[in-house]
Length: 184
Image (cartoon, rainbow, N blue to C red; front, side, top):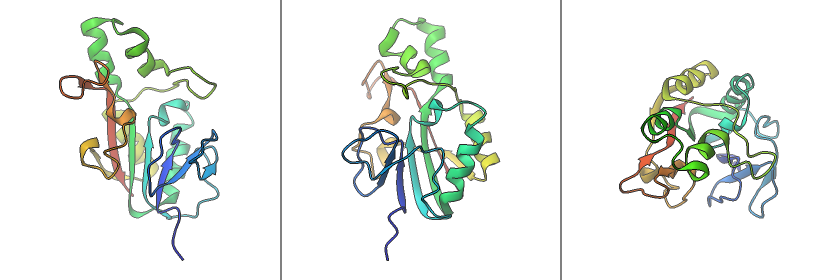
């Protein structure tokens, strides 16, 4: 019997990645399981070889993130990978220091505060590489490293892991997504 949970796309939203089991709290046509990604009680321990979660973790409060990461570690198989993308607060701070809020709602405000288009689209937490790495280690992961969206099997999926400022300038812009992966 095959394992439907070997590749999870948590908080998939409107983005569908073929070959992944899609989980979201909102009902989109491609969602395999309508669920809150904080509690994956329908997934057995050690089931996922790869969990992909792009620009979701920042939507949770700072005190609940350790529990969420521990839950995601629980469902990750030994040797499996948690691949995260979150807004990079260090990159946001650099741009703010250089230009202020010149990009307004299309730039820094959305990265820091969320799009605020629905009740789930608010950001509650900020991350830089050291803070997120420490949270991942505390949750039971190791071997934390940056990943490049150009080298993944989902490279053709244009999601927020490919967020650049100026918007969509992937040649000359600055990557605004902190893309880290960790091994269990």
